[in-house]
Length: 544
Picture 1 (tube, rainbow, N blue to C red):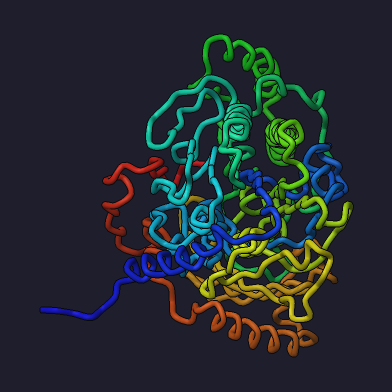
Picture 2: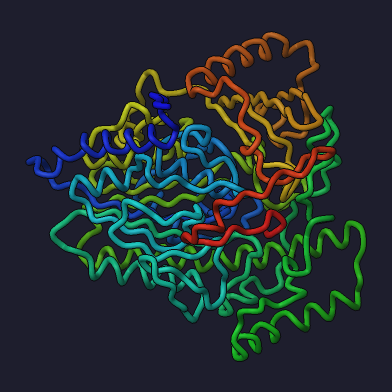
């Protein structure tokens, strides 16, 4: 029987072909020299761990990342649509929310590389494109002339990688290797073409394993504690807060704590590892702390390890900036530093991300564009990684497809704020129950407020956070009569945003992952991601 039905995959392929065709006429256009783009991206890098953002704990100095902001602009409210790794990467490539690009979660999604992405469009317009480092989208990269990526999450020490489809083995520390490969590609690129280089780090993703040279970088510092380290999840907050599984108290494993060494270390590397950790681990075992003392020990171990990872990332940024100067590229290259989302550094007793709550929602974003961005700028505007694809295309003088859902940041980079710049933003997190039992929720974010609806599988809770009156977000104001009009306005705005982003229907069951909800029959095991090979194994939801 014949049919005229068009599948979602067919639609994505058609859109990709159409948008590539749009870009083609720009290949030969006579115009000013098109800028190169270097996109330096890390995984789980909290803005609190970048000194340019001025966290009052003063956790670390990041002079090279700070330099991008000092010579360009720092964005102080870059929010994400879905605070989790793979979905953020899919959003950056496509300029779309996850319900449209199809990558909802890290559990059972596989990126559909046939759809339109900004690398494909820029490649079609004459740009040379490369991605090096963490990919984490299961399928092989498309739209890149060169790719050299980590399989899955990758590992910190002596990582295997995949170079244009070929498995290769590297020795050394993953951040250094990604940096070396990125600089090597820069030097060997086709120098007749503008380029896009995406240098994407694994660090500082869990389990936060530093380069061996950075063990002891902090001199056994006892770190200032966040005010909410021992949050009791009161303040009329609901079950979602109390029934999560991402605390330093309960969820921190022996591998997280470095009470077990990674299996990928060489014997020589293991000696250096043991020389630092074993005396401290032995002192910990003898002290046998419990209760709050145990949480404090874990917090300080976490900070040493996480911030040690950041040391290498910051060094990487400095090396790439130096390489651009040595290659004579600095003046015509846009340099962007960002991360896939925010991260908790002990706030609310947590590590990880996922929540609409600020430390998770907000990613770092610093941009340098010589001759365009005024040095030392800071923008309070509500921007997003949803805007990155549109920005790269616009900066290159290419058309932005109508189906993309963000906005170009180029006006803001020039110091201009369009009168109709967004005042609100839509957020939706899906993955549940594994790995951290964070209830699915959607909501609206404004400069002052957040209205969130926790809706599955056993909750139906609305919460209102007021960042002006409660910047730590420890209270839910939804039942306060003084906020009745605010709640009504935000619910109206939330519905408007859901229509605007085209998410008015409930998500499909697979959007939440392949783990059964409490009391639900086990979900069938997917046959896709593992069966077809691809650029990375599917990690189990229990993996960090």
